[in-house]
Amino acid sequence: MKATLYSVQGKALKQIELPDVFESPARADLVKKAVLSEESKTYQVKGSYRYAGLETSARYRGRKEDYGAVKNKGIPHLPHEVLPEGQFGKVKRVPLAVKGRRAHPPKTAKKIVELMNKKEYRKALASAIAFTANRDAVAKRIKTEVNLAIPIVMEKDFEKLKKTKDVLKALQALNLMPLLERSRKNSTRSMLVVVSDGSMMKSAANIAGVDVVKVSDLEVRHLAPGTHPGRITLFSENALPEIAKRLEA
Figure 1 (cartoon, rainbow, N blue to C red):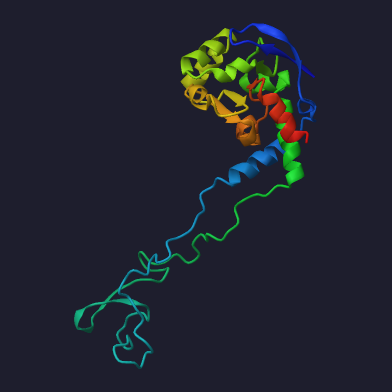
Figure 2 (cartoon, rainbow, N blue to C red; figure 1 turned 180 degrees about the vertical axis):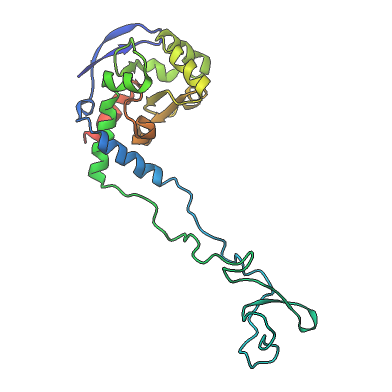
């Protein structure tokens, strides 16, 4: 598969050969499974406070024949607060009491991570990358027509842009500003920029709706937010060999 290489001035320079991963089978089911697996690893583990409901003076008064027991008092045999002069306070600690412990609270040991086979995940990542080269999938996701060759590949000088205004100029030259403006107004994610290193991470990440990720950190959820593949993606020329090295080794 070939792609058009664009300059930072928005001009089409030449046709280049894309790595074979861009021709991987389009498997939306695998992409969805991989995204859910990745997101499950970011969930906050639920659990209860270890001493919830126990930070009280309430206690059982022993067997019913013991001294100070509640026998013949007309009150339930439950842990009561300790009050002066042997008086009984409110019932505490037990689940049925006000501010008592929960009967079955969430357990931190519960497994909430959805694991995925390594080979299966590798296929899902390759499929998500292939969706970025599928014009129909991209148009369906962004709900507008793109007047550029898909996927968008920028020359090596693109990674040398250190200032946000320079990155904006490059995107403006590609007529991508309407898409970014819509993303800014709706607070949604629009474009993904894939680079070979972190040299321009800050300059591009400051643009609303744009995410920047290195090839080494690229995950399926970056390419398919919300499990929906076809995110419009801009690859730097330097990132392509890194993608081939990671997925075609």
